Length: 199
Image (tube, rainbow, N blue to C red; front, side, top):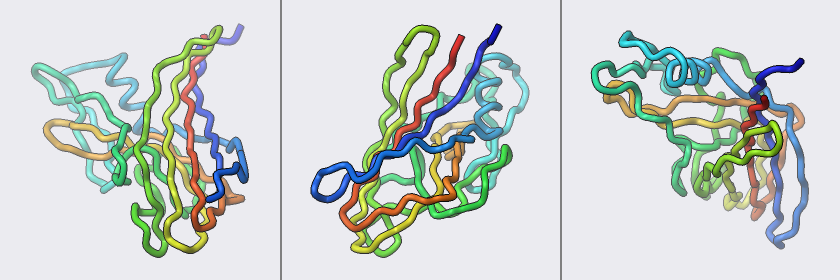
C-alpha cells in the first residue's frame, strides 16, 4: 500500500505579444532542496528550544529557531511586482540541482534592460483537495521587455523568512531544464509550481 507522498510539478506557458499561446510545457521537477526539509521538520514536527539553521541565498547561516516565545516567522513566497529577491525566479544556470543548493546559479534580475526580465507578483493559491491529493499552486508571470531574446534553464522558489530577527531569503525549490525555454521580445512566461501531498 502506498503511503504519504510529497512532490512538485512545474509547468510553463509562453504567451506571445499577440496574446496567443506559443508553447506549453510540463518540466521535470527535482525541486525540494535540504533547506525546505529543515524548515518542514522544524516548523511541523520537531520544535525545540535549540538552534536550527538554514542557509540563505547570500551564503549566511540563518537561525530559524528564535527561542523564547516563538520560533521562526512563517516563510513568505508571495513577492510583490518588481521584487526578484524572493518568490518564483528564473535563470540561465545549467548546473543540475543538488540537495545542498542554497542559491540560484544565475538568476535573471528584474528590469527591462539587456539580460533582464520583468517580474510580476508571485501568488500562492489556496489549498485544493481532489480525492487523496491535497495541493496548492505558486505562480508568477515574467515578461521580456528587454528587446532581445533570452533562453532560460533554471527555475525555482525562494522564501522570505525572519529568523532570530534576520530578514533573509532562503531557496526552497530549484530545477534545471537542459533543453531551455527561449523568450522572444514581448513574450510573457507563466511559471507555475504545484505542491502536492497524497495520502
